[in-house]
Length: 126
Image (cartoon, rainbow, N blue to C red; front, top):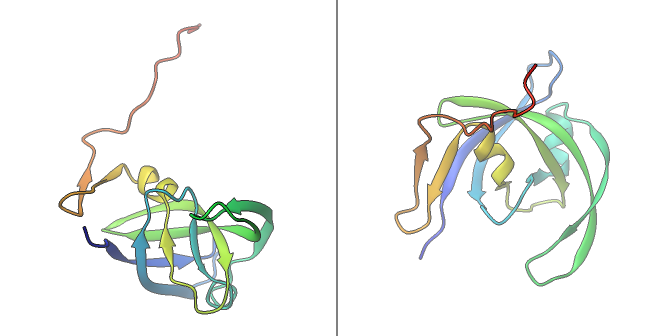
């Protein structure tokens, strides 16, 4: 089985027009997305805090994270983004995919748009 990549563009939530665009590895095992720290800062994206993340080998590592507007496949959403180490491969996590109502077929490595985003009905309606 191969890898799935997508071209994505990240911008700050504020009115700045700088952006970081790159090829992101689609990682449905990752919750948040990640890009190199220096590229995010150049795009005006600012760290908001730190979180501990678990790597595939079980190692825990702390990274700064922020929030960015992300655009790919003709859609845009807001997603958490990890400030990764220099030269790291950008990752597109599942929150960005779900934010746009997109799933990935692991066999064909193709994207599928959901006909509607799931929403549970609130049972205690007034």
